[in-house]
Length: 183
Image (cartoon, rainbow, N blue to C red; front, side, top):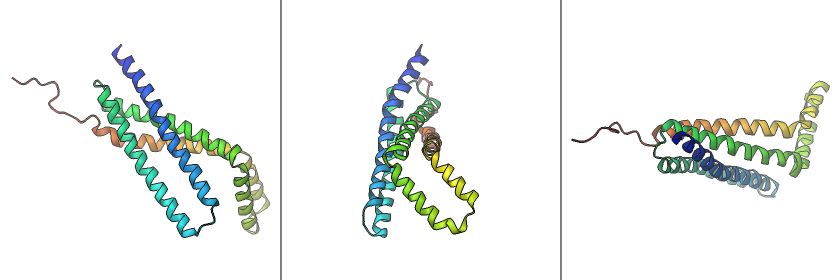
């Protein structure tokens, strides 16, 4: 019974945490798209992009550690493997949120922008490609939203899983004297 309660707490807490991660990644996606459309110098655009990426990267690492520690504190029976599982669940759920947002972006919200960028690239490299390569790129354009969805789903889940594995090693802290009574 205690294991079921822990599992229920794990999924509930992970779902709440995943919303934060999904929103942060989605906001980063749209902010960087907006920056790309601004008429600012390339150096400044690259600098802003790097600063935003570093903030997102560091913020996500810090948030994962925060939520994992909070879960361990609220569930005293949770050990390192439970905390790792908690992090994996966060990774999976937030990956679904971000992958769905990136799918919506490439299929509906910014579909014209993606099509325009691929058309520009195809025109630039047309003299270097044969007709088979051009046809393959055109077919790829038809499934771009699906490619975007699955590639982001896999990448975000793997990134979060590796991060969870690294962070969960010491959450909760290992106590070699746990269970030994003082005399």
